[in-house]
Length: 53
Image (cartoon, rainbow, N blue to C red; front, side, top):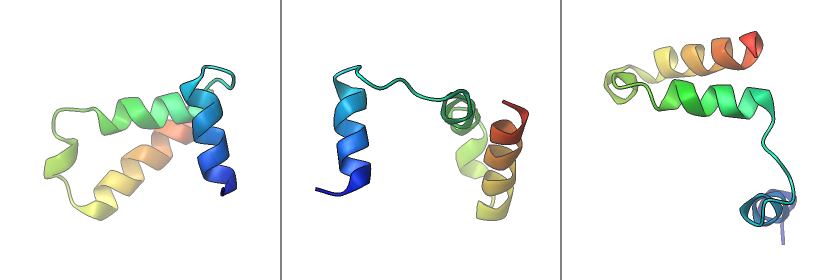
């Protein structure tokens, strides 16, 4: 099992909380226009959200 899979398993059981940056990135990805943007703009928005968190 990879470390990523292990972390995801812990999170699924609510044993390991998400960080503020991860939650901010998820909110950025949930924006209504997110999937209509170019990949570069998507990346920029997610990175800005993580940096601001």
